[in-house]
Image (cartoon, rainbow, N blue to C red; front, side, top):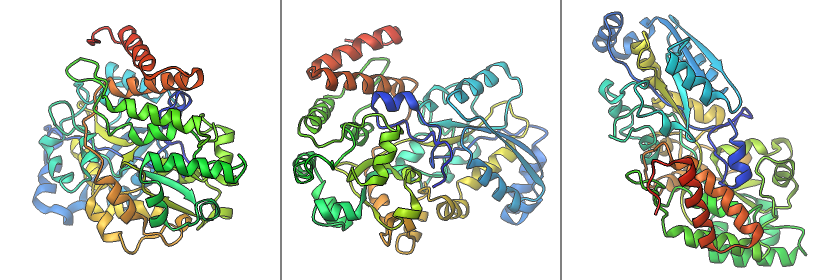
Length: 444
């Protein structure tokens, strides 16, 4: 993966991670809509009558706003395919991108034709009048073969497609084969996956690792891995403007507490901190629960081929970057052609091989399942691993509250662990903070 800022990952869920919201991701890219205007009608007509053969006849200029530098690669490939088109990609790194795009859309000043939305705040935009209806343009056909959750994250509350991605971010346990062989007895992905198929097994295994290494090596970096794995398998935090706390969180918090109490983790709770980054490369942590895009943390020159992916107790993902079309763009027809391109097997195959981003299309997973090998992961057929994980992830549409509430909860869990508070304390704290932050929600 590229080492550019990734905004795909909202961080596991820990307080420090939620605060960092790394604009990075080999995450998901989204697509926009086209509402035919008089100016765009000739282009639409030409494309519909002649199909792919006329793709080279496309012409015009597109402006794309993003926080994700890899969009430049998309633009370059789209321009190669359509020499008559120029694409101006404006990258706004850092955490102020959301504010920049919101202000531009609200004021109508210097607006882009296409703009990126990240998993952490996509739900705040999809039900606004600024985002084009892509279902009306035919986008249902584009995502028909998509991994279900990757398609669902681009839908508004009515199920209308407002944004499209080009990849998904499934997660498992990244682990060092050599370190696993020393402390777990095997570095084989199937065997390691069996060892970590439940949290009870993980806690028992982590206890043995700490004892065998005399506290120098730990199975996990942080209790946050338990939150990462479970963050989207529970019910959404808001249902009908009412805060909903899934009872399953009780078990997750119990697991987090046991991880810390039994010495399973290295107590490196701040993701992307120097200590966390070092642990990826010095062998002090056996495995990390992170999604597919996190490979940029690894020193590839020293550790190529020494890593592998094991499946976690549940399938999970983290992050995602989607492309939407500005509803008042004068270039909707051309913008939609760009969306069609990033949703195509042609682009997703190319993107997989260039950036190692996992595709959104099932067909790209299956067509590469036996032949694709990431040098970082040795000969593991990692697409088969990730595809099995991705198919188990429940598809939930985004809303404008749940990601922010998830971040609040991550911080509260950190306080709970540090001060040894009971689960109910964490839930009560969450209710209190949600009441203050979102008075329009019912909290009982």
